[in-house]
Image 1 (cartoon, rainbow, N blue to C red):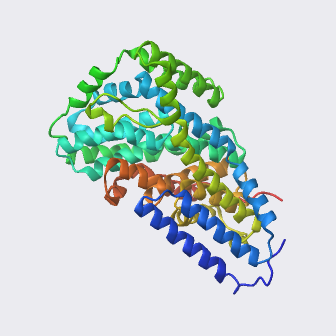
Image 2 (tube, one colour):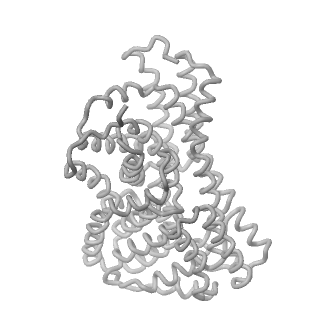
Image 3 (cartoon, helix red, strand yellow):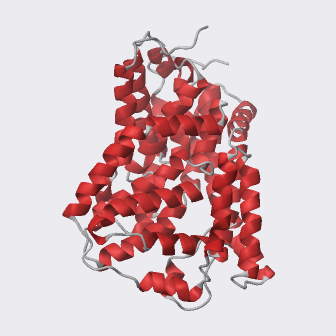
Length: 450
């Protein structure tokens, strides 16, 4: 189907809709309004603009459903993440990760350890929000009590949180990339580890230098002592996390691995932490929380199927939005510009640019992944190359945008301003090295053969 009266001067209505949608999304991010509302409003505005151009409501609905259908594998993972986070907390797995992790910290290299510990927890949890909301909060409490500047610490924590968001077998964004590019999650993870070696090495040096400039003045052991009083922290409670790692190494389907981990967690929550079956079911449905009065009440909470339903709704609306973009071809002028013959470095730089713009205007990591993938897919020789490009650009640029939900939520959880962004070295270096690699590789066209 083609647009009615389509011309280069007939894009003002769509530009207006995009600008209004952008304003609604920014306003929502800044005011803390549930982002599904502006997404739904933007979806309706875009649909009305396209109906005026000759599209039927039925065809637009079909496009939206087609786009949303792509996210179904991710929705399953999101719901499992909600369940596993709550169960791990009830089982003592997350408290043990915090307890043993903080016990390793050197006051002189506190910021470096903040990055390393958050990276490890995020790889295990597969969620940046979960990592920031558990070990991240504990580290920030230690930083504030120890007289450390919070921005470098928050930058290290958020960068570490997205190590797992990018390349954990439990990461919803990694599964979304694998789903839309039709690639293997484990092949993508291997490629991501290789591409991140130099950024990771430089980031470790950066955080080592920051640690020496901002050492921890006072070590705070109150939280770890409280954890030991509230939970049984026997090493056996780490079994659910170890099961995920072992099954991932054996390339067992991640959904099955998560179900096994949930089963182990439920057994530990009941047998070792002495929660009733009814309490465990409640935690799984609505999220974990401590009943007893303790400083841990504001730290150890979250997860659950129902709270994750909100994230699921955002993913579905985002993919529906992207489905209409793809099906209506309203961005055909961008395709025309991209279809020009380009060198490998030019294609890489354009990918970075589109990822930045998508994250600025989309306000969610999901929209940025989908739009960047749809626009750049014809210009990469293989799906594996496209998947790596998305992971090194759209995924890691999202938390660098203050009003993007990927950065806004961790910053809100840690109670910091956007001043943390210059200290997210790992996230800043990945897109830079992605672009630089294209200059070092043999110059060849990335476009698919037709």
